[in-house]
Length: 580
Image (cartoon, rainbow, N blue to C red; front, side):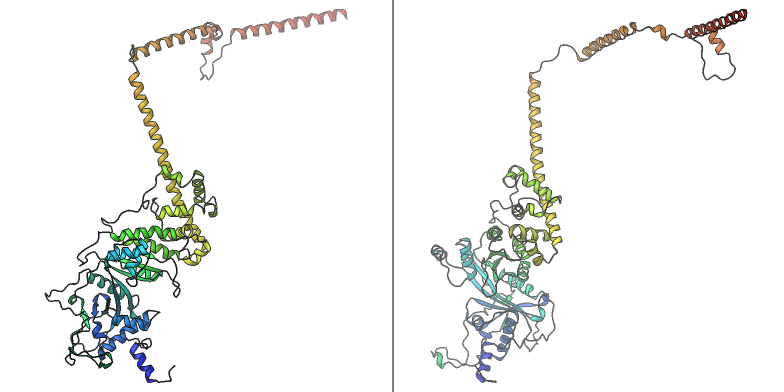
């Protein structure tokens, strides 16, 4: 459009600050510690006064805008200069009174004041289903939660926060946000009784202008003005606007979410559809001001009502609208409420959220076969596909805090990805940057803890039933005691009598047994003479034996039989001899 070195192009680039991307200012005064830096308010009338120093300061601010954000338009410059609800703050290092050069800008904050909308207008817009332009956070929250009281609160939305490229991730942005929060909370005050109103948008007429003259716009003399107010104003010298909260709206990414979460902001809204330009979900986070300077204050803990309702809706939408979201990002969004909770009288518990289940209602969630499947998988006796249908119910019980299970951050991310977002193990491998075997091992440990907790609930019910049964038996025994009568005979006398009868029966049985046995066969054989003869031996006797009567008779018979044989054999030989 323009030839090389065209004067019009050069003038246009300088006017709209379009050449700031190639001229990022260097830090010349050294890098101070964030705790040594102070936040200053910028007087916009002086900033756009066409003064030489103000122009250089504006160029530095726009160069930080361009280097920190991907989307910049000339409209941003118009908002900085003309938007009545916008405020500009800069974080500077230690500034000395003798310094003659402009200080290095470390961080720039652009804030937009929102809210304080008439409640009748809000009710009328909600009834018609319309959303008015401007006031991004109040109208969005009122529409999402159908609440007509939130827009009446006053708040500040951080439109932009830009840090010098050489100072990224060094704590300067967090320090700037903390100073801004302290300022609007009324913690930064001046000890002087007379606080100057430096931020008034009505510019004091210069000495070179006639205030009473009604000049036309085309007759205005464009030149640097005189009698300007200071460009930088200390926060202690400027009274803060009465606000109830500080908010931010941004494209949801894990680094940005961690930054705002670390600074105490709580998510209350995530857009279900992605932005067409960036492909990101829009997220709104709020931080209530505990010590606001506003005259009317909402009930304590009012933010928890919104954040807890958002938690419940977010869990339900993970399977549909937020299924493609990174599991680590989704887990950080969910746990941001617990980290930055502001409990008070106005915060009420969500129905069924955090209410512990008991073993009596366990069968409403799992059958006995389901519990056996979980136990089998926990013992590595089955594949993970056997329990995939039970994982969503287990995940909801864990994240709704209805069972007492302690899981690591990685186990929670895996349980949320598989159970609530219905992701596969291969998809989680790419998102979490873990091996498949690691994911399955962590998933098994999580299911094992859940199965053990559910088994404990079952055992508690069984133990209570056994106790009730025992108590019922004791009550019956007490009733039987009342119906029993005392015995007539003492227990000791009854035992003695029964014992005497038993002994008598035993003795009669023994006597009858002895009468039927011939005891003579057990009598000791031998006379006294035979015993004396057997024990006369001088040597040590190991055995003493005496022949019994039967043995003696047998020996006599054998001896007599041998004699007869001898006599018979002798007579026969004599006869043979005679015959011969």
